[in-house]
Amino acid sequence: MRVVVLSDTHAPRRWKSCPPRVAEHLRGADLILHAGDVCMASVLDELSQYGPVRAVLGNNDVPDVASWGAEPTLELDLDGLRVGMIHDSGQATGRLQRMRRAFPRAQLVVFGHSHIPLDQAGQGMRIFNPGSPTDRRRQPHGTLGVLRIEAGRLIEASIAEVS
Image (cartoon, rainbow, N blue to C red):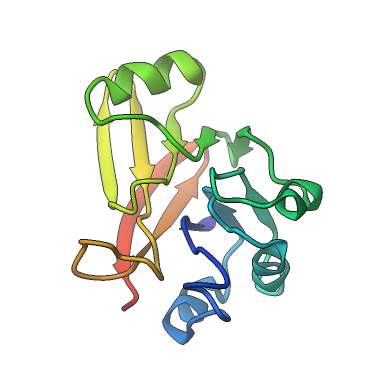
């Protein structure tokens, strides 16, 4: 299973339409996860043209994103891998412990909010922030995440530069 992970697209200020380098990664995805701050449901509709989409609400999301189906948190089974998803995981200090309490059964927690890519493991789980493809803030590049899952195992998690 190939999963593309996005967060913090911030339409329409930052995302006018799907950037070509993002689209390259979306083609052939089995699932697209958006970890919040979509800002407009039309982005989720656009992403749905590439594959199934699941999303959580971010602090900048308007009501139509919730109407589209985004939830405050999600727990998913992806080919046997237990995944939790939330937009804001809080400050860096104590993050792993907080995510373990929030998602006690998860093997992987996906989040956004900081726009800072992160792939960290510890305390029996892995936490993953894809960064932002369109609003890099102080990061050198816009980024997204790609996960490869097989038979309940996260085989690969990578951060891809898209700008």
